[in-house]
Length: 581
Image (tube, rainbow, N blue to C red):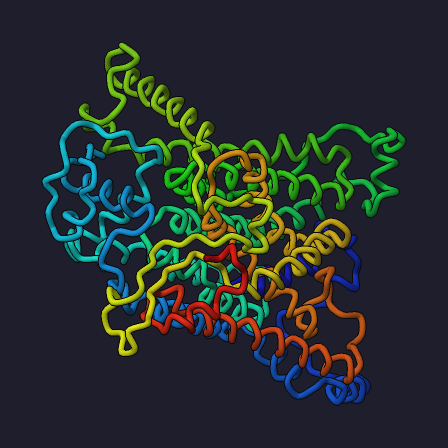
C-alpha cells in the first residue's frame, strides 16, 4: 500500500522544512481522518461546502491513496496503448539505432561490443549478422542501455524491429508509472497525478524515444526512479528526525526566516556545539544510489542526478535542524546524517556502475584491455580508467557539424526537431492517394513545452521564494538533467536529449494547472480560507482549457511520432516552424 498521504501529513503537521516554522496550528491542519463535526462546527463546514464548485468538491473527495493508484493505472494504460502497437512500423534501423541495436546484438553474440563492417544496416535488418567481427569495438557509452535492448532481441529475434524496440517501449511505460507515483507522493492530488501521467504519456519526445532504441529513454527511467526513492526517503526519515529533535534537550529556540539566518551568520546566535539525533535507517537512499548508478551506466549524464540528489538530501538535513533550533545545524547534520547518506548513495552508485561493465571485465578481447600493463583485477580497473579517459576525450571534443544538432538554449521551446526517419512518394506502402509520407520526428508536444516555460517560472518562484520543497523536486529535475547541458553548447548535441527531463516538464505543467484549479497552493500549505466560488470556477475553466488544448495538440501530432502513413499535405500542416523540417 502506498503510504505517501500519511507520511506527507506527518511532515506537514510537524514542519514543512523549507516552507513554514512549526506551529500548533500546523500540527492539526491535515489530520489523517477528519474528526466528527460538533454542532458549532457544522454551519461553518456547510457554508464552506456551499462555496465550493461541484467539480472542485468532487476532486477533493477523490483525494485518497486509492484514487492516486487509479490515476496511475489510467495514465500507464494510455502510455502502453500509444507505445506498444506498431513498433515495427519502420523496419529499418533509424538514426542512432545503427549503433545501439547492433552493439546490443554484439553483446548477445560475443558478450562485449565487437566491430561491425560498414554499411551493413540493411543486411542486419534482414537477419544477416555476418558483418560482426570479434575485434573489440569502441563504444563510447556504458553498456546497461544496450543490455536492455539485447533482452528484447533475445525474446523477439535479431531481425524483428519489435525486438529492437520493445525494451525502450517498456521502459517508457515504466517512466510514466514512476512519474505518477512521484506526483502522488509529492502533492497527494490524484488529479495532478493523472494530468502529469497523461502529459508524459502523450508527449512526442517521450513517445518517439519509447519507440526507438536510443539510450536517453533508459536514462530518463533510472533518473526518475532515483528521484522517487529520495522523495520516499524524505517521507520516512524527516518525521523520524523531527520526532527525535522534539524530545532532544539540546535544542534552542526555533528559527524562521532571513532574520534568523542573519543572526546566525553574524555570530550573534552562539550556542554550544552538539551533534544531536539522526534520522535512523535510510533504505530508500540505498535504492536511490542503485538507481543513480544505473542511470550513469546508461549515459554519463546520470552522474548529475547522483550529485544534485545528494546535495538535496544534505540541504534537507541542515534545514530540518535549523528550523527546529539545533545549536549547530550544519555540523550536526554532517556528523549525524549526511555522512551516512553519502555512504548509502555514492559508493552504492559507483559499485553499481562498475558492475554494469561485467561483460567487459570477463572478455579480454573487449576494447581497452591491457593498456595499463598491470596484471590481475587491479590492472583491469586501471585499463577501464584509461578507457574512460578516452571516452571523455571523445565526448568533450565532439563538434562535428550535423544538420539536426541544436543548442540547449533552445530546447525548452523545442525550436529544432530531429528527424529520425523520413519516407514519402511511391516508396510509402499503403498510400491510397500516392502522395503520402511517413515520418518519425523527435519533437515534444509543442504546446506542453511552450506552456512548460511559464510553468517553470512558477516552479522557480515556489521553490526559492516560498521555499516549497515539493515543487523544488521539479526544479531539481531541471537542474540535474537540463542545466548541465548549457555548458556543452559547443558540442554536437540534439534536442532528443530533453527526454531525460521531459517528466519534470509534464509535472511542472500539471502542478501549475493544479495551482490554477485550487488543488494545491504555491507555498504548499493548506489554504487559510477557501477562494470565492467565482474564483474557483474561473480557475477550473482555465485549467480545463489548458489541459484540453495540450492533449488535443498531442492527438494532432501523434501520427508524426509513431511513423504512421499520412497524407503529405497533412504532414506539411504540422511543420509550424521551418526548423522542424
